[in-house]
Image 1: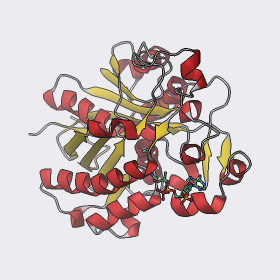
Image 2 (image 1 turned 120 degrees about the vertical axis):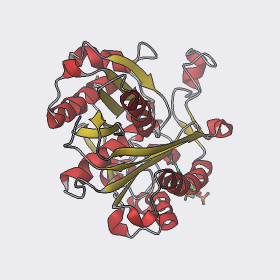
Image 3 (image 1 turned 90 degrees about the vertical axis):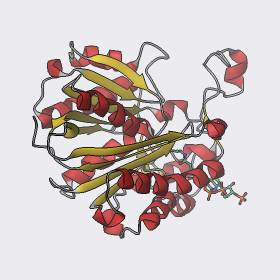
Image 4 (image 1 turned 120 degrees about the horizontal axis):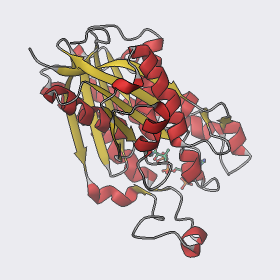
Length: 332
Ligand code: UT7
């Protein structure tokens, strides 16, 4: 019998405050029409006050544990994918573990930009497949509003805050069939945050130069994403011995509807087999795929036995995909 990892629980959290395109029109030189046509976003959720990535992650994690019926003490591993950790160290996963009461879990953060959640699924699945661990939690949580330059129209219209979480357990039927992970560090400066690390430790100069905000060459990332999302989906299907026509639902990273459409076209998938919720949330980086997966599940677009592809791209530049035969009920 093959032992694989399968998702047995999903959860999400988005902060209540909504920032619409019309709100942004009052902040920078942009229009609802431009954002809708060029990106596909109508509104995004933004944290208020002190809310952190770990606090949003906790909310999503609790719901994922509820759905799976697993108690936090039974978790062997917690991976938090984020580019907006609570602090540079310790890992946000450690903070989340303590608040969750997951006393038996090993914890670490994983930083692969917007590909982080799918990277995290791949890592957690390896521990489950080998038998080292039985129960893992993968969280993607981002407070991107805190690293966004709200005077930069090139970036501030794109991002939103939120968290998604998945509980992974062992199965002998279906589950995650294959993974495809990659990176191209030559694109590191297409999308980055220059300040606050060992290269540019925070000081008055880095703050004056706004180095603590996201910098992006949108066009470069766009070209990379269009090329990568379709290819990573095809590659992971080939690894699992499947064809694009076997796919029941594609859940892509939610960054730009034009990027998503290009990926769908590469796989020759009709619109109803591609899940898009970008208009409501914007790009929530590592939270986007788990939030979309949960919403697809809530809308009953996913049932046991379905072939689901998750695919993402992000800072690094990185890409990641997985194909799974959905099976949330059968555990070893
Ligand atoms: O998860 C990964 C995160 N990053 C991404 O997903 C980004 C991927 N890239 C993209 O989605 C697109 O490249 C953008 C949405 C960022 C930009 O779209 P684009 O079609 O590549 O536009 P552009 O950068 O070529 O700009 C076209 C025009 C420019 O004006 P000119 O030079 O033609 O006069 C920009 O100045 O649109 C202008 N522009 C805006 N106009 C109104 C750029 N941002 C805005 C804005 N509102 N917010």
